[in-house]
Length: 170
Length: 335
Image (tube, each protein chain N blue to C red):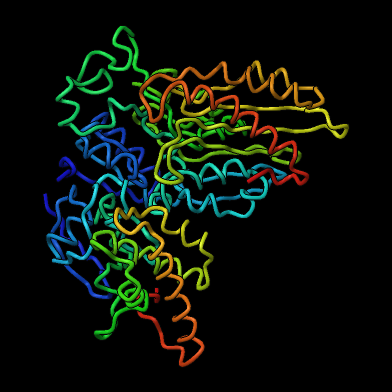
């Protein structure tokens, strides 16, 4: 039997009737039309479907929507702000950190969560934070470099006008 | 696409309500906490419960309290991330922090709980496969079939205990509390395990693992080493947990060695532990102890990497863990 639930996704509230066995990944993509969250192994072994629950990276393929009605869910669609890409998205594009792009939304969300907790991570800390996201194209180096560049940009921006970063707000 | 099989979902608000629902619904119901083990297993149709009872929001399963002097209590619903980051656990029960941090990936540790890791379903190359894959080879006795595909002549299932925290909690002599409508029981964690891949836990279907109790840690050092192909994602194909207490004169007062992923339950290396007690550690003794401990590991060809390699690495990892603990000057154990 379907249950009517409310999900808070990227700052908006969605009322949706779900079957209990539908995963958050399926509801995001198929019911809410938010297809930026990618559908990889479906078994917790790739990280492509990573989303943030209250700022914490989890796998949407292993999350039941019924259990996260009290959480703020952030997907890749929630990173841009008034038409402007998040600094991580900019540096990923500029530095060639995406090739086929399939792992990129998950990588970006893991990176957003990292920089929120640790604005100046070491290379080792970046590797740790991204150790649940597989990329089969880039070899990771460009991804690490893009995160380092974004960290730099964010810290300069914060020193300047302290522009709030929407994706980093709780 | 791998979809979940249909089920009813119940969300109790208290532990009492959860145990009542679990008893009422009977064996067709399963509790779910983080879901990081159960949900993939359900997608592969290894489990097809008609009812899931959500434990995620139960306050009775939360919290880390106590002290290294008095012992510590960990709610079974605490995430592996919160355990690996907890300052007292990192400082005084480092083996547990290391094991929690070694589980899978950050995303899974953010959702997966310690209770779920302790009660992880046993694993096997012939079992942790999709329904389609298992159908094509005729299924195994753990689900839908009648024989063990690793050891077809064997009357039993050889699926492997693959929880990183389980051997550590055995080495730390932890106790666990299980509750049901029939009452509650607190048992040494060793008594939670059966040597049976099909029925690996003494937990009854109506029981919920509520909390883990760690004994006082003063004077103890501990560490955990994990063998796996990749530095992330992979389950252990060998886990070595060692806890040691030294006397003021340098002799070893007490030692606990437990091996993970070498059998259907965490294995204590009793002979090796006895050989260490009361002794001054010398390189020759440590080598002897490592060899003795490794005798307890009898891997079968149902996990990653070859049996020969996994066998060869067992004494190496035990020796390495002992060396790390004995070399560490501080009581904080080893990285």
